[in-house]
Length: 308
Image 1 (cartoon, rainbow, N blue to C red):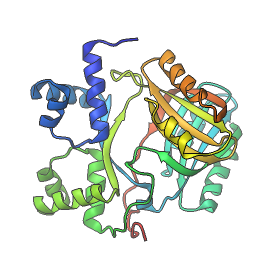
Image 2: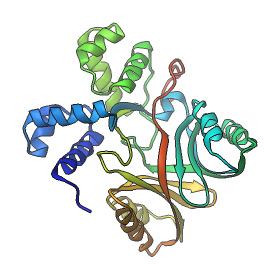
Image 3: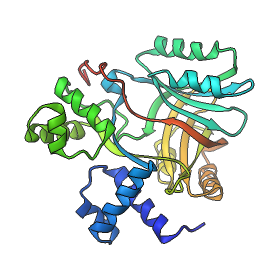
Image 4: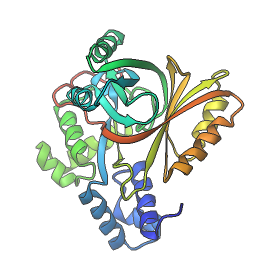
């Protein structure tokens, strides 16, 4: 399905901002081949509508949250109570209502396996929850971050923390406004922000409201593979639309998220993944409603050295 020129330009703009959320208007206009006034107007329209948020995404290691997992939850009756409980937890970065055997998909972050176990156990003991399938991430091969590894060694002070949290609200905040908000000079705000980006403590990208004017639908993939190999990973990551990919311990060997403009587009991506000779089985589920899809970290916890 082909969208209107307006929609297609929006998607191209969002793709560029996903790569660099602070890209200057003049650079975006040059890559899109349209006047700067058009880019400025489209960007303002997308942000004011809530279709797109441009935010700093701090690496989980900033909070020493090195252990992650994916939960598929089956609920008896209404999902509302379970969803409200999940949204109250700071370590839940994703909550989505999905099609298929399970009803809710969740991503959790924790400091260690014991903390992760306790968080999963609390969910499992809910009266409304009938089943929880847990997949523990081993290697995150593609994520909202530029790389999956821990950031380079870097000790965050109060200024760094304040910058991260301000940019989590508005990733395109001008350095002058950022400096005023944090209480430092503009040159310090610029230097500190660029250092945080260079050392991959954070990156600035987009979060899109699925199915809105960006026409972005998402589907989850659970893969059984004959054996892990760099060639298999490279083949999957080269497929357009693969947003997330991780190796896991649990019911699946790998798990991923793919996006597309329509259900047939999602199906085509799934078929490309299924066609790999190393993929022996695939299970899919469609994300119906992303109730939470955030990478905002709670204020006041970012105090530990990063990468040490």
